[in-house]
Length: 312
Image (cartoon, rainbow, N blue to C red):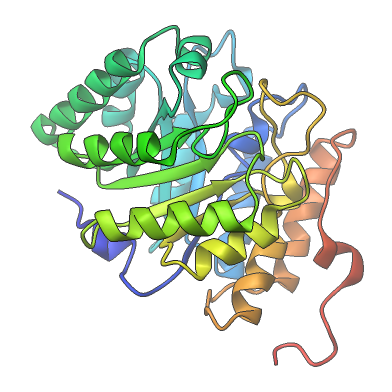
């Protein structure tokens, strides 16, 4: 089995670029396989090592992920790169295990209402599927990591406020059934820094040395402030998307994920080494503009550039 601490070392921040999965899940136009390959290779040259690369979903309904096996192959050919892909059902899990992907992601919601709307299953049913995924992983020749994202961890667009104890209960259950990593997701951008800090600190205490992440959306402009709060409270992994790509069907008219370039700048400015060259990421933005010219892109660093004194 893959050693999770080799992929996500303790006392080091890992940044994952999720543009090829979360960033593409709602777009109408998307890069072809060759452009995705250039996207990954340029990011790898810039120092990015963690990628979310797609989902195992029906190609006729989600054509942006029809080439997920090709994208995974690109990742696997890069020494030191680690790819994660989403599997939302047993069929997807079987395909993911056969793909050679380094990490399989799945999702459970902090609220019953959102879980039913998002997956047509109760949370108990989804947690049972997470347990089954871990069991199938243990029995397979290829033993990828399992990462569970807890959607609506900080607030739900359907149910409203979320009791932090409920989110922590679900996180503990995910670890208990075999998940290697749990991520708290601010799916619709409800949280502010105080809320992020409190729940991240609580999960840090109960995780018992196991990795955990925070997945942030910039719906209300709090993405970078919330990432800073997570950094101050022991987070291991932070997600971001190039240019702030992405969105959520439960947060209409909202911007997407926290901007990856700005996230790198935050970490480096705060004393957390990432090994990522921000200037080199500009070449990846060019691919996005070429392949998805109507897709809005965000980012303060991309607009203003780096300070003359950079790096400090």
